[in-house]
Image 1 (cartoon, rainbow, N blue to C red):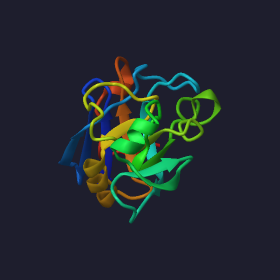
Image 2 (image 1 turned 120 degrees about the vertical axis):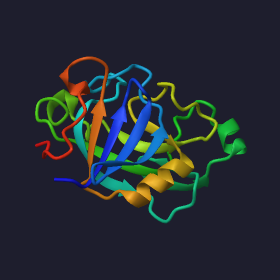
Image 3 (image 1 turned 90 degrees about the vertical axis):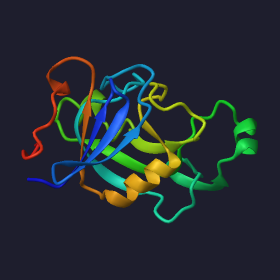
Length: 177
């Protein structure tokens, strides 16, 4: 079954959007500073098959600040950044992921949804291509706006980590679960 698929490569720090089995867009990202991993509290980016559970922020301005998945009414800027220098900024849009592999990234201590793992925006000054997040997949605001408009709830996401069978390219014609 061909459709849309997001493939995130932790080693390459890259997100690829595939449509009908062909590369439609490629974006630099920043995944977890602590590398790949599934355990709650690890600060790692979970691997394997996921899907977009919820998309948050449609219609809001670029740079909208989110706390607890809710817009604060603020727009990110230098003054706000200076006021809160240690804040882990979640900006513009949120694609909240849920794991599809029971016992691995769904359920128990490895549940991606309960770990609050998102694809989300960050300040444009934040480095891309360097693992610096607390587990989420960070993108530049404009890149995320483009991606958000092209995907929908239910679209599959495959996150490839470092080492092991889970790094293999997904079979795009197969249903992952």
